[in-house]
Amino acid sequence: GIQVEQSPPDLILQEGANSTLRCNFSDSVNNLQWFHQNPWGQLINLFYIPSGTKQNGRLSATTVATERYSLLYISSSQTTDSGVYFCAVDNSNSGYALNFGKGTSLLVTP
Amino acid sequence: DSGVTQTPKHLITATGQRVTLRCSPRSGDLSVYWYQQSLDQGLQFLIQYYNGEERAKGNILERFSAQQFPDLHSELNLSSLELGDSALYFCASSATLLGQGKMNTEAFFGQGTRLTVV
Image: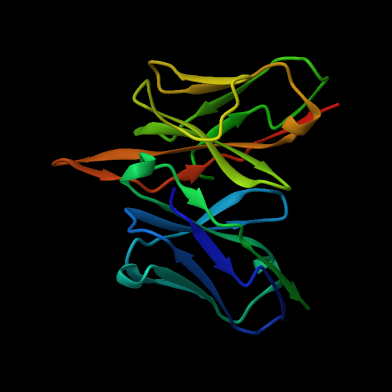
């Protein structure tokens, strides 16, 4: 199946700092989503972004489908941004089931 | 609120037992997916149903089964439970028809069922 690699695996930031999370994938995709898993375990949709660039407040994402990667930017980080960020992709071979990367664990300290 | 409802939120049961997890998808979504999240395996796709029929299978054990009912809600049955089955089980839904042959494939996840096998 399609492989998804996320980097870095762990990240510690001070409040107010910016960061970039990366997702590489091994095949063409129909769908790419970024999720935030909060400390209570909820998976929260951040972006549905198979290609192009989107912004939502302090977060933005860019997917370059031809080069098989996506980037998630977090600006002016807050302690509530802590948690695990997952990239997930699907293609027609998976019947639209998402394949998840292992995630980037982010801790934002005061 | 994602619009996907899972029950129960927590479940504690003994080895060898059988449990049923329930999922109600978002209104209009035709696909339901089940995922297992454990510490050592990450988020693993188990099985997908689309409009009542099985569409794709992932790493689902033979002791596990699922179905999707005519009202599109789904149940995941886990039997002969082992300690290693302790995990967070997620349901997700997607595939809303937009008309003119187009479909929105963005997936939304429920809050999960935390299963502990003792």
